[in-house]
Amino acid sequence: MYIDTHCHMSRNDYNDIPFLIDKIRKSGVNKIIVNGCSIESSKEVLELTKKYDIVYGAIGFHPTELDTFKESDLEWLEEHINDDKIVALGEIGLDYHYDNTDKNKQNYAFKKQLEIAKKYNKPIIVHSRDAIQDTYNILKEYNLKGSLHCFGSSLEMAREFIKLGYLIGVGGVVTFKNAKNIVNVIKNIDLEYILLETDSPYLTPEPYRGEQNDSSYIPLIANKIAEIKEIDVEVVEKTTTANASGIFDF
Ligand code: NI
Figure 1: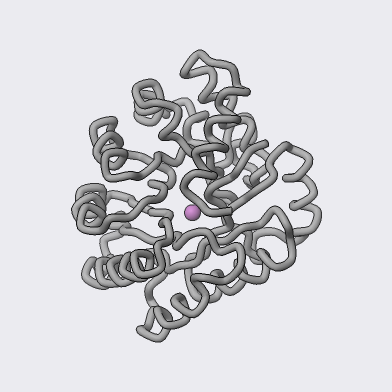
Figure 2: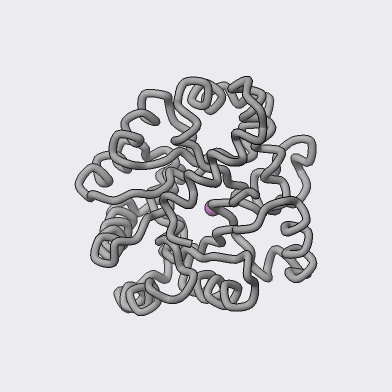
């Protein structure tokens, strides 16, 4: 059985969620962590966890969705962080990709959420884009664990995050032709530091790239990792599921 440690499942993206849940279940994925990015999507996550047995949740505020962010959102987060089936804070982090980015606001919201994670002893699911050094410098100050979701940096940085207690989230990008970086990371770190994820509805793995992604494609990512590490896919399945169970309290 597989676990998708990072995906999204908004009504805005999928019009038939019961069908989707059924499809995921049939693919051999029996747990998925649906991530919120704003207060609205985090509320959707709470609803989904109540409705579907395979759905677990991460709630939090994404760095590029902070336009309407206000202090009271943090109170809401604290009120719900210990709700049933909420296994992490996510998707949180830093994203300096766009020129109009308010770095101060991102840093503030990230740190505030890390403080909540620390207070309630919750793992975190981290988004980091064009901001790896700042992400590292901040995480170094907090003694937390979690996932570096959709890891896109170097092998050296992967090793540094692993030292801090983080696991490396690997998704559909690994199946892309230009995936040199993450292939190199996978080759050179132990399987016990790898988590599977889809980040659906984005980043659909080959051969479905361009179509809508969902958690049922997790086995394609596992197959690719098995190929890269020259091991049986069953080992990837077993180990990554154990890795996820070790970090997130299902
Ligand atoms: Ni995501």
